[in-house]
Length: 421
Ligand SMILES: [Zn+2]
Image (cartoon, rainbow, N blue to C red; front, side, top):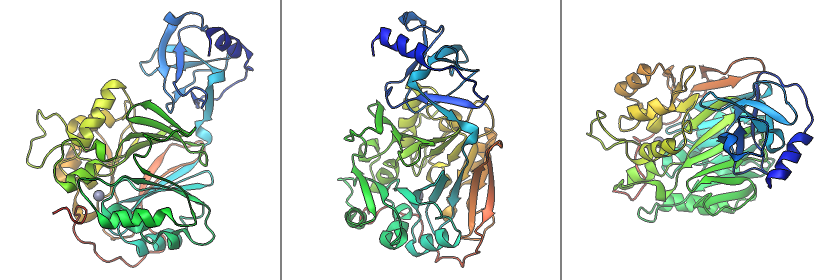
């Protein structure tokens, strides 16, 4: 857009009052971001304070003035952003729930917002996942997207009877399935991916290099490894993909570590709340110290991204990486994720008793509020519920499944993909 046109468009936008909780974020027409300027003019390139990237949100400081929103840049400086390039998010109006489910072994979460459900991982017991969701009334909203973070059976096997889970009456559902690692073949996962692609209720399948080759209008690369994704069926959610795929495994040499560090890591921003899903990434090798240690692997890669763009990892709610294992949650990583204001809510998908006391202490040191999916010790019935209602703050708490299901079979210890010995 030329400077002249941008100026003309800006002065065209209508004036109007905005509520205190109004946020702005770049519209699809501005995938390279929107400049925040120290005055209401696009005529001087020297007045740029900050470029608001696609997928991030800034709070407005007051009503629209001649087509410009007064906003605060992340460094605290006040500036102006052109309204025509911005989408307004009335954050306080958005109601949602995010449940972290103790479903068999592994990890699973369900996000309900608007009329949509998004499932993130499915544990490792297909029968139990379906029962858990149906009897808990957790599938009232159509399931529009299923994300498998990586090929560890404890994260995808819950979807292995996907046709039955989706049901005859379900709407079309999209699937994100990370690529297979050519260095570590896993026949069962590959078979699952192949069969899922041909199911009638499955609409789009994002498989392989995921977003690297995706050119559709909803995927915007912020840099070669970070993608902002708009979900057309859930405009309340901004998804930023930060990490994932076989190419993201760093130097991890054994197959289990490679699979864990290939996990998709992404942030979901809903209203003013930001959730960071880290799946099974790690930060160091077993037996190495956390003292004076530069994080490696998944956490190391994420911290490099944070160096380039401050605040990228900041979250209100974090799924503690790799079920609370000590080779993840390096102090540097926790420090980066902790929000500047308010406490970090750290959810430990604490299956297999992997969460280690030393890790929990690390989070407590940063004043994080910790919730475990095995809090009540009622295996298979515990879950952590984060809920946001109009006019209220985000609230997280432990809950038991309303139907008090019989416990599923105890899964084998957390293991790497088959064939990786
Ligand atoms: Zn896992």
